[in-house]
Amino acid sequence: MSVEEIVKVSRNYQVTIPAKIRQRFQIKEGDLVRVIYDENENVVKIQVLKEPWK
Image 1 (spheres, one colour):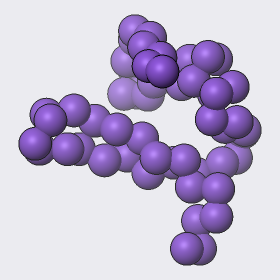
Image 2 (cartoon, rainbow, N blue to C red; image 1 turned 180 degrees about the vertical axis):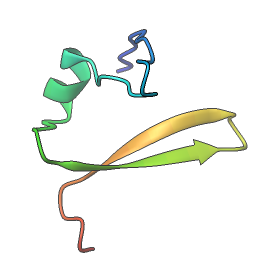
Image 3 (spheres, rainbow, N blue to C red; image 1 turned 135 degrees about the vertical axis):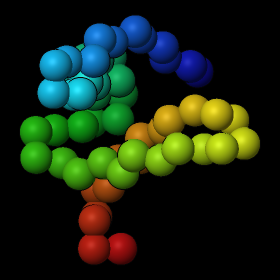
Image 4 (cartoon, rainbow, N blue to C red; image 1 turned 60 degrees about the vertical axis):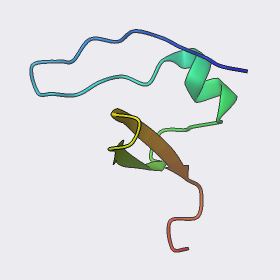
């Protein structure tokens, strides 16, 4: 299943993770995410780190 949303970059270069995606991955305030640029696909991905020490 694919979930896609369009978001706007703020003045401080921030983006909001859309509610559908936050709910699907159970992302809560204070959680850490890793931002990855994939050169092969030419896309930016985020990875939720539920256990950031691993």
